[in-house]
Image (cartoon, rainbow, N blue to C red):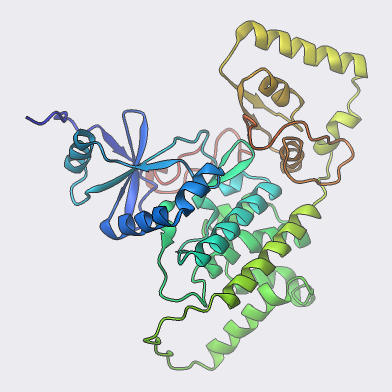
Length: 388
């Protein structure tokens, strides 16, 4: 006799619909993913290579396992017709999106994507998607969550997701660095980023010739314009797959150096980023506030704390030191950048910062809500990505 309930207990995540190989759903407080047979075979090969366990061990990939229990397997198959392979993922909370991140958080997510791709191609795999929506943050640490994005490519001399990586990682970082663009306005205008034509025009007639933009913005823009004016017949796909990884490896390493340089040259500025040095509290009053917060936290002993208007994180870090899981929220992305560094992230050479926490063990998750009081909800009836 079946032990499965007559009522379907699975709740599909409505924003998980773009990947044809499967989708995410909740069931009784747990996170699962239905995957097709092709994805299952790819992930089994990734597991056999040792990459899957190593990435999870180092916190690069969300903790995941194949569902093997016969009773649970039978229930999931009944609730999800057409699927017979399932993963269970470690929950990550809170969920955030690129338009809620600071500059350094987007840069760290880009570096994670490049690092995974570099290791993947050496083992015979590749990422077929390269978007920040495949990354979440556990504390200040980026974690890749979209396992079905990993594939066995036909060619290794090309990375098919490079264009998406440029649109959703590199272009917004360059626009922020050289034009002061806000990540919120970049992503909320188009969740899949902007093409090279729109980005090249955003830099202006002379700005697009900046040496830092030539290879990644100006050259693709010129080639696209040339292709539009002088269309050619499609080039037939070679029957023999290419296994030469060197061109892609060199380009990935170049992009990695470029993004590290962008991240490390970022200097948080603005009134709120300097609030703790400009406010009228003297040292005694400041210490009194911190002592009061610590007393209240010890008395209440909360498991989790939300710090609204966290600024550069003095009180968020105080709560984390007492064992609270902290969600630190501030409208100012520069303040969030400083908080990320204080937790052990990048160094913005900002004089008021001191690294206080080990990034790998921090329980503080910083992010920036886009528009108060809640994030815009893309999709019909706000079903694509619910606002925070």
